[in-house]
Amino acid sequence: MFNSFGNIFRLTSFGESHGKGIGGVIDGFPSGITIDEEFVQQELNRRRPGQSILTTPRKEADKVKILSGVFEGKTTGTPISMVVFNTNQRSGDYSEIAGYYRPGHADYTFDAKYGFRDYRGGGRSSASARETISRVVAGALAKLALRQLGVNITAYTSQVGPIKLEGTYSDYNFDLIETNDVRCPDPEKAKEMADLIYKVKGEGDTIGGTLTCVIKGCPIGLGQPVFGKLHAALGNAMLSINAAKAFEYGEGFKGLKMKGSEQNDVFYNNNGRIETHT
Image (cartoon, rainbow, N blue to C red; front, side):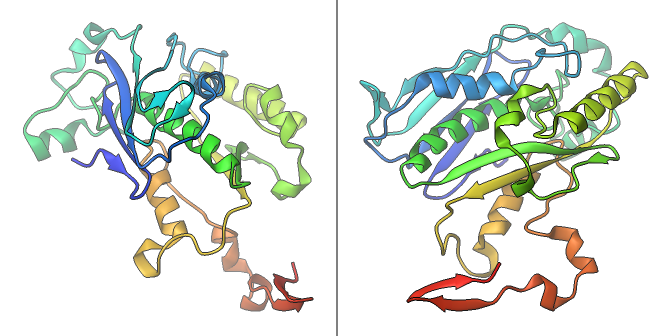
């Protein structure tokens, strides 16, 4: 089973949602980066369940402990290991499903592949999104390093069910993302999304959505030709999240309705600097 992602910066995650804890080891993190542990914890708090009536009611403190790789507030260049201990796991709650397979989970596939399965929430195969704890911590640490390169990464909810933002990211104020439970930069659309989620949840059902991620200051030339291209790596990372079922880069499927001349940009020389028109 593959439990690692990345090459130069590599994360190996461990743990299950109903085990003792979730954690990870990061290899390749540069030395001398100041680690703001409060920022890392804030990022982790953003993914914590039980924050509103729209999310799972499960309560977890989710306090991260950095075990190695940081000394006197700075990274040492050695592997960074971290762990978040589970405090609300109730494995016994899942004993009734030990004898049957759930739809939409990897219960059957895991059993058929390995001849064994951890039915407590699905283990690592189809567990709750709790495995993403290690990704969030690693991502927060990566953000601290990327800040020194002028790279900023922002994500927000752009669609829930049929309710979606019509504009591009430049039409919205990112400061409004954290002002609502849905984390949408449009307050009116955020209320519509929240009302829909609440309604569907009240019916004992769920509804899907779309997240938009904006990366500013990305250096030219990241990635490698063909199989190692940047958007292939991004797609690999995002689609490895259990609930993610589609990935778009740039215009994505909207490009189906556009001519090539509408999608392409034109390079020009702006006083010795190569730029594009749009």
